[in-house]
Amino acid sequence: MKGECLVKVDPERPEREALERAGDVLRRGGLVAFPTETVYGLGADALNPGASARIFKVKGRPPDNPLIIHVEGPEGLWSVASSVPEEAWRLVERLWPGPLTIVVPKDPGVPSVVTGGLPTVAVRSPAHRVALGLIEAAGVPVAAPSANRSGRPSPVTAQDVAEDLDCEVDLILDGGETFFGVESTIIDFTRDPPVVLRPGPIAPEDVERIIGVRPLVPPEARALATPERPLAPGMKYRHYSPDAQLVLVEGSTNPREAAWALHCTRLWLENELGGGAAVAVLASEESIEEMRRLGLARGGEWSLGPRRDPLIAARRLYKLLRRLDREGYRAGVVEGVVEEGIGLAVMNRLRKAASRRLAIGEALSLCRRGVRP
Ligand code: AMP
Ligand code: MG
Image (cartoon, rainbow, N blue to C red; front, side, top):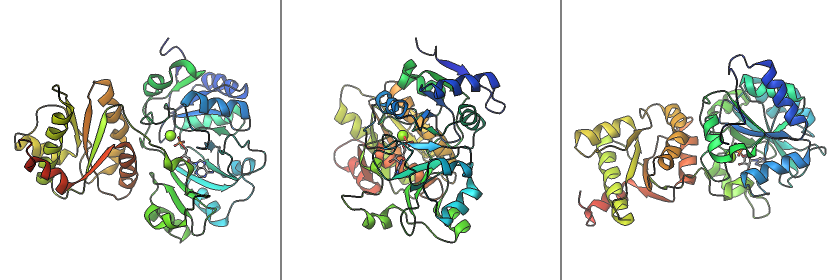
């Protein structure tokens, strides 16, 4: 069955016929997976409660984790939001279409299944010709979370979508690999100052440059959360995880130290798992080079790109997490990236995906605690 619901589209000049067919599926209450500039989305007519409810069922998504509604541009906000603060409006005028989601008070016409019962709604306009063409062809706002099974790494290719959801969706538009590889930045404009609920390709500095206000980021914003009103409903769930166990090594400043720390963690994990289990290493180009130079590399070291370039890490992140499972690894050790720009988003996802986190010193001490270096 796999792949029978897949339809290839040209990401630059999507074929009219494919978009019309997909738009038709959405208008009739069906589900369409489609590429955006961030990850693949699983779309339904946002104003049709039955169709949106099917998204939760197919993904196995908890009902209190709301969906993002996709619109063609700023004007589309009026179909789903009851009000838009002036700062939010200025921001979307500059950044849409683009990888920015805003949270604003919802219009009563948006079914509560879409917003997980919240009085607010998350909205964005995706910078991808297939996504925009689909919204236009459907003629309705499109509710779409990432097109993965809940908890798994987000899909960056149509094959990733098919791997998780097969043909439980009516149609998968295959427009090749997505650009950023991590999900949009979410900013909550129902709080003052606005709060970054999820870091993504748009950094807090970018927002400050445009609206003159720096949104709060999670450690500073945590004080605003109450049990009745958590910052983001999705935050409490484990996310982005492969079946393989993932251990994150954080805080390395030089490749030589990182090479040893990754090696020690790998040996310790192999020891713990027993039975000759293979453990992959996901690390910066520099750290992998250093592992080779020190004679610590032995295959199964995968590069997240150069340390200075977190966009490459973002683009490889979910692909490598899925590769662990595809190649049958029981575990992976991953090196943290610098928390600047999109690197903030990469670290946010890695911390949620990892089952254990080690500081560099802890990782190094594993070698001293009886695991042979
Ligand atoms: P996904 O598209 O799968 O990345 O999930 C959508 C994300 O948007 C989840 O993390 C939700 O918690 C978040 N989200 C959607 N609607 C709202 C809302 N009204 N308020 C806060 N967060 C939201
Ligand atoms: Mg998701």
